[in-house]
Length: 369
Ligand SMILES: Cc1cc2nc3c(=O)[nH]c(=O)nc-3n(C[C@H](O)[C@H](O)[C@H](O)COP(=O)(O)OP(=O)(O)OC[C@H]3O[C@@H](n4cnc5c(N)ncnc54)[C@H](O)[C@@H]3O)c2cc1C
Image (cartoon, rainbow, N blue to C red; front, top):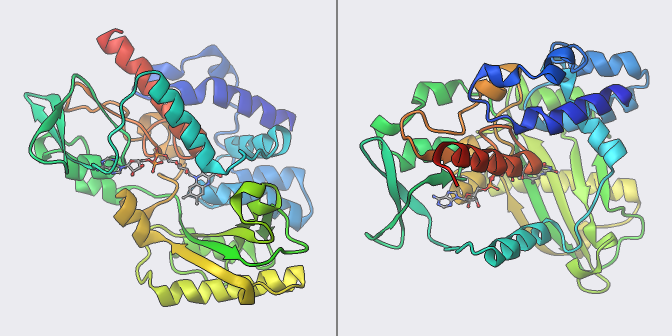
C-alpha cells in the first residue's frame, strides 16, 4: 500500500496534469527521482504476485486492470495506484447515481454563465487557413462562430468525420494501429421485488479470470464464460427504485469492435449471468424482471460515435501513454483542442475531467485569459 500510495500521489498530482505535448514536461524532479518506484517497467501481474500468494486475492487486485486495455502481464505496475484508490480512498456513491454528478456539474456551469445547446450534434468544424472559425450543427446551415474550438467528442470521430482531410493530424492507418480498451455489454434491469441478499456492489469471479481476459485482449471474441460486475444501487439509495423494487445494472467487459452484437447474443449472456447470480444469492431474479434495457458495442458507436464501440478509450499501454497519446492540441488547426478519454491523461471519469482542466490551462497559456 505504501508503494501504491507513492504512485497515486505522483500520478494524481504530477503525471495526469501534464498536457503531454513534449517529453521535457516529464523532467520533473519528483518524477525523475521516483521513476523506479513508479514501476513503469514492471508488469502489474509480477508486482501483485510478489505481494500476494492467494489466487483469489491476486485476481481481485488484477481485476481493475482489466478495464485499462491490456492483460495484467502487459500493464505497468504503476497502475497499482488504482488498488490504492479503491482500498484506501474507498468506494463512494453519489446519491441519485452517477447522473447526479453530471447534473451538479451542469448546474454549476450554468451558474458560471455557460450556455448549453442540447440535441444538436456538431456535423462539421469549419477551418480557414489552419484556424477553426466555428462549428456547424444539425440545426442547419448557420454556424456557431468560435475563437477556440474544444472537442469533447470521441477523438477519432472528431478528426475523421468533423474535420476535412487536410486538417487531420492522424491518418486512418494511425487509428488502425491503436489498441483500444474494452467495450462492455450492459443490462439495466428493474425488479418488482426486493432481493434479500443482494449487496450494492458485487464482482462475480466464479469463472476463470484468464480466459475472459484473453477473449478481450489476445483473441478478441464474445466471451465463453465471462466475469461480470453487478450494481444493485437501490440497496443503498432509495431514490433509484420504487418502494419494494430493485434497480440492477450488470456489466460484462467485452473486446472493442466486436461484430454480431445482436439481441440474441445479448439475451444469451443475460440468461447466463442471471442464473449465476440466482445461484449465488439463492433467490430468483429472472421471474421478477419488469424492465430490461441492453447496451453494447453498436450502441456506443451509434449514440456516442465511439471508435470501435470502445467504452474506456485507448488501452493504457506504455506506447499509448502521455506524449504517445493523440495530442490535446491539434497539430494542423492552431486553435483546436481535444478533451476526453482518447487524449491525455487517459480513460476514466477523473482523467477525462482532468483533460478539461489540462486543455483550459493550455488555452490560457497560448491565447491568454
Ligand atoms: C458502463 C461504464 C462504466 C464505467 N465505469 C467507470 C468507472 O467506474 N470509473 C471510471 O473512472 N470510468 C468509468 N467508465 C469510463 C468513463 O465513463 C469514460 O472514460 C468517460 O466518461 C469518458 O469521458 P469523455 O468525456 O471522453 O466521453 P463521454 O463522456 O462519452 O462524452 C463525450 C460526449 O460527446 C458527445 N458527442 C459525440 N459526438 C458529438 C457530436 N457530433 N456533437 C456534439 N456532441 C457529441 C457525446 O454525446 C458525449 O456526451 C465507465 C464507462 C462505462 C461505459
